[in-house]
Image (tube, rainbow, N blue to C red; front, top):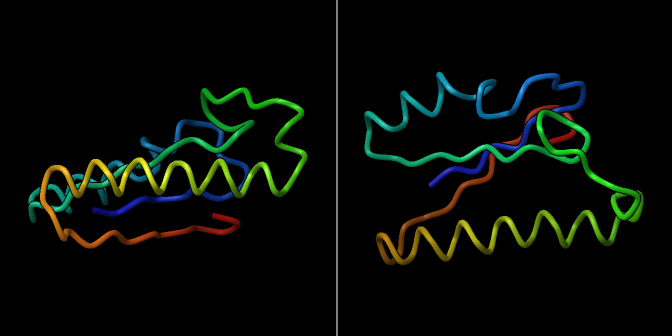
Length: 87
């Protein structure tokens, strides 16, 4: 399982930015997800995202949920994080 974190200035949803890579991985039986960061794509965000502790907990929550889903699908599946720019 791979989680892709996009960089700054993303106008379109991050899934579209990483679609080609995710599709290539899928053909190798590797799942990939690409959440939108606040204020990017369809994620409107809010003032709470001005607090770095809140942002880090938000990212950690994404990682925990994806890891849980991956472990339910295939126990012991490794989880990789891939970032671009500030991602």
